[in-house]
Amino acid sequence: MLKDITLGQFFPGDTLVHRLDPRTKLLLVVVYIIALFSAKNYVSYALVLLALISVVAISRISVKVLLKSMKPLLFIIILTGLLNLFYTQGEALVSFWIFTITKQGIKSAAFMVLRITMLICGTFMLTYTTSPIALTDGLEQLLKPLKRIKVPVHELSMMMCIALRFIPTLIEETDKIMSAQKARGADFETGSLLSRAKALIPILVPLFISAFRRADELAVAMECRCYHGGDGRTRMKQLAYAAADVVAMLLGVVLLTAVIVLARFGL
Image 1: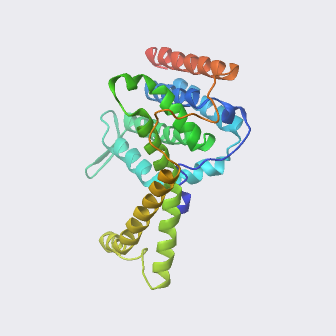
Image 2: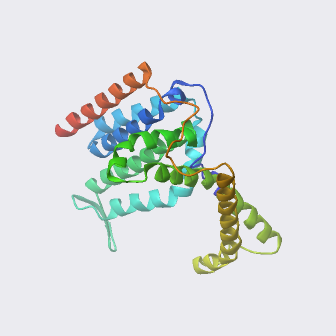
Image 3: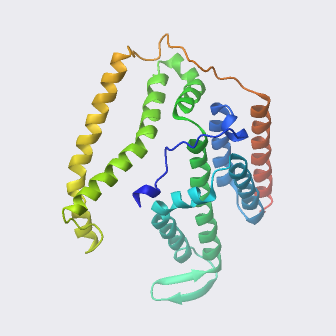
């Protein structure tokens, strides 16, 4: 299960999506999320889904990778769907015990599951096609106006980049610790939910020690390279908008406008 978590991973490539400016991709993700939450019915959802499928196809990210990334969140998706299915008011179709399935509940559950799935896939595409360094630079540039009110933009961007970068590393470390514990007779898969939760406690101590050790090593490495924040720093690769970025932003605005208009008409 841990190996299925792909958040923070970057898949290098030379596709149009990979070549887009990171600022453009960050803004497009925001536009995509707004469009997704503005969708109200079949047509608007189909339009957003078409946009997501187009991005995945252009980026050449394997559909298996996206589906694999959904596994750790499958329980949350199913639970959300069931809550919407049983507790949405409307025309009752089936009723048993304290549960009632309504026509509106089926529709609400289907749309909610679709929305969460598309939200996860769309946001994961950002990290899949953008390197952590480019993502940090893009985020820092977008938040640059906040420097006027003394917000440490560079430091915040760097912390977010480091957090994303070390998610796969910590997952790999957790998997190694669990394998070592299993070799010593630990059981994480049988018993009640409470007993399985207690069995995870021996994993937390070495994991925290490993995380603190890596953080200390990273701090020493940054100090050895004379890192002192964002003041006076230069970049090897300067960010610059290209024609593809302008076209992508226009398409994003068109998508958002179309979804809002369709939602107003109940489509």
